[in-house]
Each structure stands twice: as C-alpha cells, then as structure tokens.
Image (cartoon, rainbow, N blue to C red):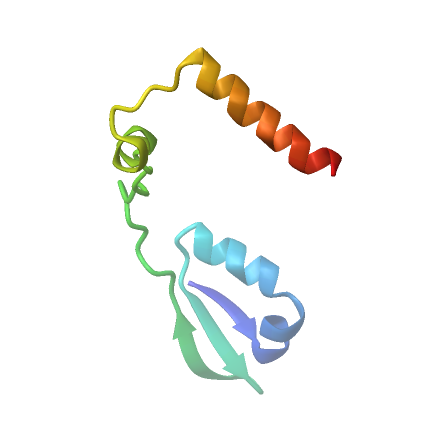
Length: 85
C-alpha cells in the first residue's frame, strides 16, 4: 500500500492516479495520521458502445426508393439555383 499526504493529493494527483491505475491502494495521511484509503474501482470489460445502424435509418427514411438519374440531376440543379441566388 502506498502512502500520500493531503498535499500530495492537491499538488501531485497525477502520480496518485497512476498508482491507482496500477491497482495500488493509497493511504492518505494528514499531519502523519491516516485519514483515508483510496482504491480504484474495478474496470468493466467488454462494455462496447452500440454503433448506429445507418442502413436501417436510411431505409426508415427513404424506404426502398431509388432516384432516377433525371430526378438526381433536377435536385442538383434546384440546389445550385438556391446557392447562386
């Protein structure tokens, strides 16, 4: 078990955080008397974030709709008109 002072907590927390990351328990002292023990929380493994399903989202918005080449060209021309004023 490592020992640190209240001053160490204030001024050198990165060192104490490193100790905790290595699995150490840290005893905190104030004026030579122990006042607390700090230990790291156990790490959760396998907690992967859920990725968005873009294909399902696109299908929900557009369905099975496929634009023809003519429709795409018209939409682009319309957008360009709006940009040009």
